[in-house]
Image (cartoon, rainbow, N blue to C red; front, side, top):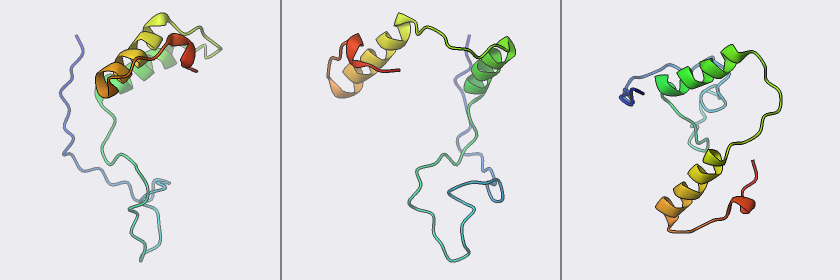
Length: 89
């Protein structure tokens, strides 16, 4: 089971981390960059780590579940039905 709880209120200092948003001049207000100011959720990190542990990063086929998820998202969020053939990975 995936743990979906996550603390989005935890402050993370992003200064001097090559952050396009925060490593700016002293008089610059970085309101023009859409960036996350919170850590990535453990569920995402775990999924990425599982893929990294595979140690082979070649081209892979895209399962139909990916296209189904994209179509479902569009239907749910925008009440718009899209076809698998319209989606480019």
